[in-house]
Length: 350
Image (cartoon, rainbow, N blue to C red; front, side, top):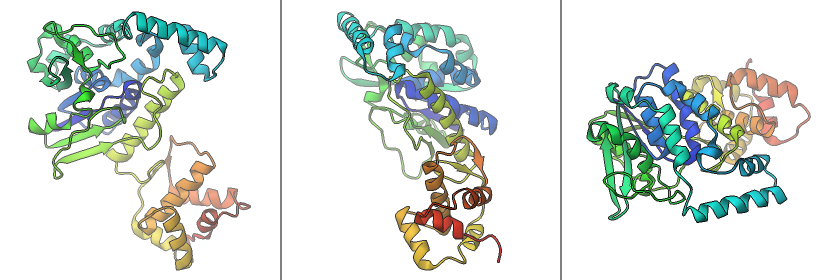
């Protein structure tokens, strides 16, 4: 059985939306999904067989409204300018939050009501689980869908999402709950303990406790190498960026493609060794040390990525390293940095 564990992390959950599309495209069948906080909501939608809708949900949902912020404040935040309008909107929102003793859960509830089909979730062969924390005794609550009463499933998802910034409400059995990240931000062990042989963990670097799992467990990690923005980042441009990042990062792992920040088609180590044959050992060592690389292949790919990042190449493309080298040789002839010089000295032919 193959499992999927989804970390919590607020708006960063948009990364998981893009990543799951890569799973679908690669034909990887998930037998069970467990999540914490926003990972629980994403997981419930995946388990209800609506995972292909996640990018649409994230793109079309008004995150500011969902989290109870005024439209003036959201507009001011998205403009990224601290001015009088921003300060007025901020003061108004802070006042509302204080008076309400936290951010209202109304928007989160409306999103779940709109997008989650509980019947589809229950009837799906894909298992679903989540983690939350009962406040009175700080007890972690791990539940699979078979353990949840149908009319309380949405409440359990909300309970898993209850960060302290939200207004405290009694949810299940007249109890208060906290975000599951306070005990287990990425519930891998839920799946391993249930007998899943392979688990994919999609990290979004949310705040919380990361529980260790057995070193010999077959756990494949997919995580961002660049910033996903803040946990409550309301900017739709950042959400779109996260969706794309999640897709390409997952595709890289699932197809075992090359690269760290960029994605390259796979070429053998021997191909990269041949490229270095006309370069002195001193030059190779210098670049290797500068980029903290290990092998000749690693050195060349990291050198390419160094230049691509510096020259602001598009992250969202699958590159052919041979074509990239040729383009760098042609386009950046006047740049005298030693990494550029190293790439220009690579030779395809004798």
